[in-house]
Image 1 (cartoon, rainbow, N blue to C red):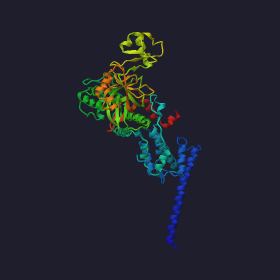
Image 2 (cartoon, rainbow, N blue to C red):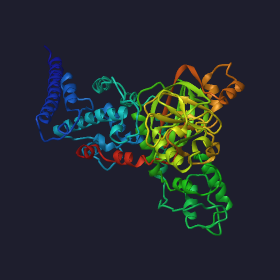
Image 3 (cartoon, rainbow, N blue to C red):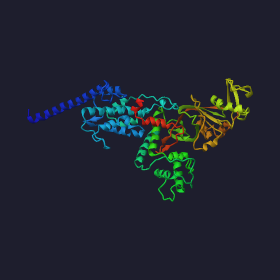
Image 4 (cartoon, one colour):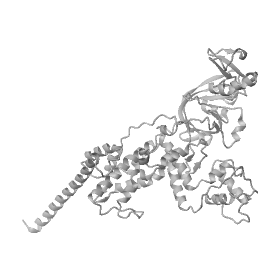
Amino acid sequence: MNKKIIIPIVAVFILVIGSVWFFNQRRSDLKDELQANLNGGESGVLATSNYASEIQSFYASREYMEVWLFNGSLSGAGEEMLTQIENSKYDGLLPDDYNINEIYAKSSNPDDEDKKFRNLTSEEKVKLELLLTDGFFNLAHDLEFGKINPSSLDPNWKFEEKETDVSYTALLEEVANGSSVEKTFESLYPSSALYAKGREAIEELYEIQKNDTLTWDFAKVEGAIKVGEKHSAIPALRKRLIFWDVLKPYDMEDPTLFDSTMFAGLQKYQMSNGMNPDGVIGSLVAESLNNSPQNLIDIASINMERLRWMPKMDWDQEMVLVNIANYQLDYLKKQDTAFTAKVIVGKEYNESPTFMAPMSYIVFSPYWNIPESITNDEIIPSIEKNPNYLAQKNMEIVSGSGEVVKASKVNLAKETGYRVRQKPGGDNSLGLVKFMFPNDYNIYIHDTPARNLFERETRALSHGCIRIQNPDQFAKILLNDSSWDDEKIQTAMHQMNEEVVELDREIPVVLVYMTFWAGKDGKANFRSDVYERDSALLKALKNTKSSLNEA
């Protein structure tokens, strides 16, 4: 055989043999590392992983071939995975929970933005591979379920526990076979458009933060500051209006004066943030203007976690959505708002819970069957002070069998088996109509005779139920029947006896507590944390998983 032919054949043979040895060595290194971890080794990657058995099974099924490395450096999938870990901050999560610092420590240029991974030892390659895989499993879980278990943190979270049939191992197999890491994680996002828009808003806040040169010391305001008045907080608040681009820089004689130019900028800011644009700096305005970009990122992160907690649902379906923190009800069809109304929610000590239940009927001219707690805490003491209290409030006492009994014959403080109800009428505390979605918490939506309360900016005023403005319009859109015109609805609302009207379908009612959301236009909306639920969740999110596990 010609020597010129033999030499290339030998070279190819050597190359093939070398490649086989190289790949077998990679398999051997990874297998040894997995076994060392699972047998109590000190390398630490799988020793502390919640997914050690899944990772072992995954690599065993593919004969211990890597996913994230190629020729000793990050593969395309590896680079994409690293980017997804870095970008988890836009989900309001901590990249360090997914091994980012340990991964960076393996980099040959850890101080540069564009990380490179070169000249790694066999042990370092294996650890880098396993760090990324452990990060994949943990990030997949947190995107689907949330980092924190809501039942351990928020007693008012009453939604059903989220369920899934997703296998993270199967998702990783898809990535190993060429699927996009980014698209794989996106498949785990909540189906509501609120999540994707919220993520974009957080990314924008990070960009804004890069240009933040202000000091955000708390500018304290007690009472209210009106245009024309002077206050030491005015210079700082003016700078923040300029920072948020609702006010242009301008010359002024006295920086402490709340002048007409700042007044106009403040009104613009109030309108943009869902406040009454009265141009007065009160507690809500001051609280809002004291929020730095980092504060807003934190608030947004809290609410992204709440969205991840939500059970899976069809957001395109007809539904009634009540945002307690926004004091607003929206009737939605295919995620478009067909009706909106102001609402009054529970007081701070009678917090409205968050849950979902189907609305099935409407009660016109309702009785108010007063809860036992209110009877004991409010009605009985009022009767003891004023024997005519029940008659003056259009109330009556009813026996267990439903019969009305004379108030003079019953001592509510000592006798059991009786309840108090308020008869239908304009002074009924439920107003003229209520909307029923039976639930374990005795919460429903109803009218109110105190309609002037809807003009207040803060409307946490009820015993827990949801009071709605314009209930007649709400009834009309729910009934969706031409026979129920305005006149018929008004007649039904002004009867001496209550009338129950069954709806022709069940409509999901979803009560949420969102102090941040981003609309379809991408605009970030922030609201005051009236129930003070945010701080505990933020603290939990700020803790790394390792510290949470230790706790």
